[in-house]
Length: 305
Ligand code: AFP
Image 1 (tube, helix red, strand yellow):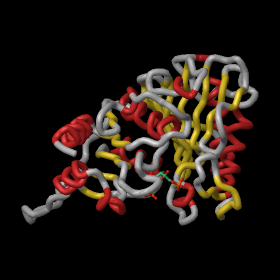
Image 2 (tube, helix red, strand yellow; image 1 turned 120 degrees about the horizontal axis):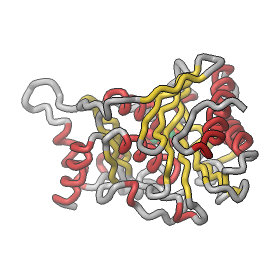
Image 3 (cartoon, helix red, strand yellow; image 1 turned 45 degrees about the vertical axis):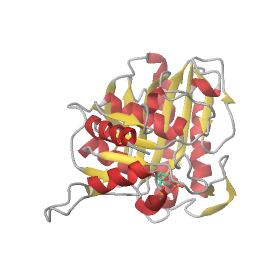
Image 4 (cartoon, helix red, strand yellow; image 1 turned 60 degrees about the vertical axis):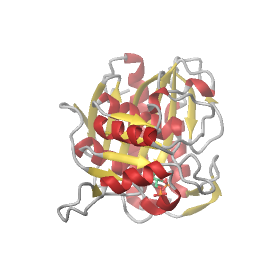
C-alpha cells in the first residue's frame, strides 16, 4: 500500500494512509452532492444527522478496520469503543464536522486524534494523544495535523497528496471566532471579557475582528493560517451547560495541533490537554488559540464568576 505520510512513529503510517484514503472518498461524495440532506437518524449524542455524516463514518471505519495497529475506533456517530484489534493505537473521529454548514456550501471536514495506551474512556485524554488534526472539504481537500510536536499541511491534487511541514509557529491576529447567540446566558466573566475584546468606544478600528463559520474545521484552518482565538463556551441554557463541542474528538485534537504550533487551550480553568475524560462523548467549553489570548481568558475567569 502507498505510504501517504512518513510519521515519526512508523506504526502510524498505515493509520494515516487509512485516514487520507477515507477523506478522499468522503470528499468525492461531497463533490457529487451525495448525502447532503437530513437523515432520518440521529447520532449517539442525539444530534440530527445528515446522510453524509453516516457515509463519512462508514468510510473512516472501513478504512481503519483492517489495520492491526488500531485497537479501538471511537466516532461521534457510534456508541462506545469499537474494537478492531489488539494493536497499540486508537483513533477518535468526528467523521463530518460542520455538516449543517456543508448543506449550504461552507467547507466542512473531519477531525481525528490518534491515542496510545487507550483502554477505557478515561484514557482518551490529552496526555495519550500522539497525533491530531483535521481534513477540510473545501475548494480543495486539505489536511492540517500534528504528528507528535511537528505540524503538517497536506494537499490532495485529485490523485496524490503532497504533505509539507508547517514552520514558523502559530501566526498572530486579533481575530475572534465565536457564536454570540447565547451571550446573554454565558458566564458573567465571559460576557465581560467578550465586551472588552470588542470594545470600539475609542471610535477607532475594532480591536478584534469577528469570524464564525459554524464549522470548526474552517475556523481552525483560519487559526492555523492567521492566528486568533476560537471559542465555544458554556451557557446557562438547556443542552449547553458544557458548551456544544466534544472533548475527545473535537477539543483535544484541535488543542493538540495548536499547542504543537506554540498556541494553547483551556476550558476556562485548565488546559484542554490536562482535562480528565469521564465519557467518550462528553462536551466541554473550548477556548483555543494564541497563548496570550488563552492566558487572558483564564485571567478573566479567575477575576470573577
Ligand atoms: P454540525 O456538524 O452539526 O454542523 O456542528 C458543527 C459544530 O460541531 C462545529 O463544527 C462548529 O464550530 C459548531 O458546531 C457550530 O455550532 P453553532 O451552530 O451553535 O454555532
